[in-house]
Length: 221
Ligand code: DX5
Ligand code: ZN
Image (cartoon, rainbow, N blue to C red; front, side, top):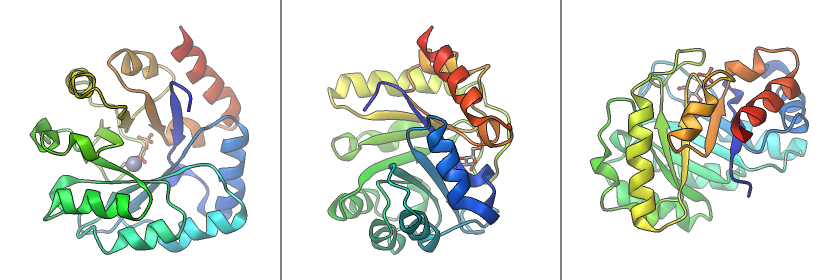
């Protein structure tokens, strides 16, 4: 896998023609499909579940699918998403009674596992599970909606998490989600992120390739 991964959030895609839109964004150079699952309980919005993930696989999408679970409880959905073709499954620690068990469950089902930290969630929940993490996702907005502005304090938090990852000696992806765009992607990368979720910044533009190319150009500087 390359150093930097661009993961368009399909929350901002055209749900009426989702397969085509996901195909288009991958053809435009995206690396990973970011799949936002919201339950109107853990977050105040309702989106898509395992059937839609399966539908994308059946449509022929072969790129990694990064399932971001904003649901509570978490565990019952993990086998379903693994079966439906998820590659990575991440969840919020507040939404699981037993964080270590949930991480193990994801791995037992053959997926990469990660924790998602909201803007106000402290880093302490990472302490005893670093050995089980493939991804750490820092939310740079409060979860629930696309199109919000990047919360600037995330930059400091990214630096702290990057130091923890370096100290662990493990190869853990540092993903950032919310308000990422061409104008800020470079400073986010400089703070330590290597996987960038972007929804509205990509799907709200007519030319996905132009946006992704601009993001890569920023990352290459
Ligand atoms: C928010 C979601 C994000 C979001 C990103 O809860 O997890 O993935 O859709 O959208 P933008 O890039 O528009 O902030
Ligand atoms: Zn997300």
